[in-house]
Length: 119
Image (cartoon, rainbow, N blue to C red; front, side):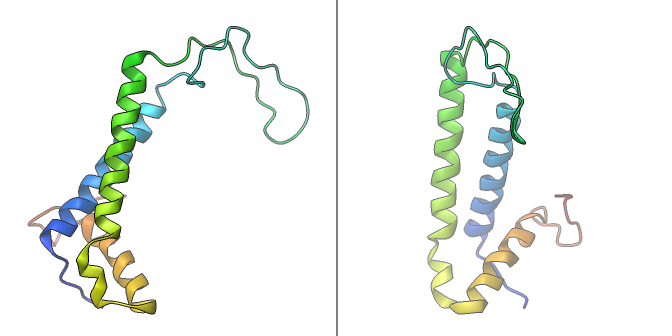
């Protein structure tokens, strides 16, 4: 099904993808714990998630603020995308298909329907 998504919905979905990617990228650079942990965590030798963690200083105030801002951006944009009035014209399986279509459509750079960005 070919859907002509409103430009503001496409832009919001692209912004959501960018905010989520920025949060994921930042998270990969942060300490393993938000709070300081002077002793770390020793591996127990049990279970599939048996991972030792070294001592950590925790997040800085700036890191905490960046994470909070990006999480707020993701939440705001996700709410905007999922609550957009455009979805009211769909129901049932058509709604699911349309929402999935938005994900694909948002990967196409604005003004370039012949080019699809890599996921």
